[in-house]
Length: 394
Image (cartoon, rainbow, N blue to C red; front, top):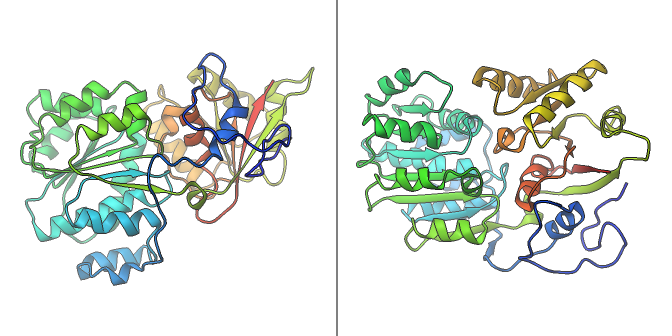
């Protein structure tokens, strides 16, 4: 096993070469390069480190402050400390931060405040996956409890006619995925000309999943005088150019990598004569592997890994795009509530999932891109804990 020490190569103890912007061939992804690159500090975006700020110093409306306190939010994370004041002032935002840094609360808290001050205020939140949309809605309900704030969830694999009826009530917040939102716009039941804010979460994943034309189409229906907030764990040149075409004089916030995650990155080589699955099962039997998220490249591969581990006696569940919405929600709930200790997932299905206390991320298959690698390993090492990411190579 090769262990990541931040300033050295993981494979030959030479100092890591500080390079940025180099590309990886999708046909032959190199985990060695991924690990090395994840420790390189780039200077393309100004990084922000915020001093400690408490929520009770923000002069928020009392009912909103109570909801924040009731859910044990005390001190702002760096992206909240910089982002919340800027959003309250009406500025456009480009936020570069991993899931688990508090970025969702960074835009939901000022959004709830704006609706409280102006009951006609409306916002559209777009996410790449149904799971992320559900998580955002769940957090929105925390902050808007006991408040007359109405919301609608517009995602696929759920009855569209229920969503149409809810949209007729003119909800304050619409949370949805691009395909379903476009469908509702084409049916002329989602009219965006009176919306005041758009939030695009996981912008890089939107681009990777081919949603760029849908996003442009949806945004074309919004009024030009709006507030635009864009968040992502990574911002490539293409994503940055796309985002900047939709925003005006944005405030760009980048949370420093070393302050958002603390992850040991290891490589396990499959011994000659052994199988990847056998190596994985050996790792999972170790005591320190308490709560594990395993990534496979394909839906079929995820199903195969899940079935094999189940046959070996492991408590395991799986999530990918071919599972129904109910099956996906059940899998996430079981993993969150520790009914199972292992979840197998594809990149798309697990995108944006925020589950606490994941001790290990295992890359059963090497991810296709560096951005996917960062998103995968970012599931662990949260809330000032040490996480471990393991990649299996043959």
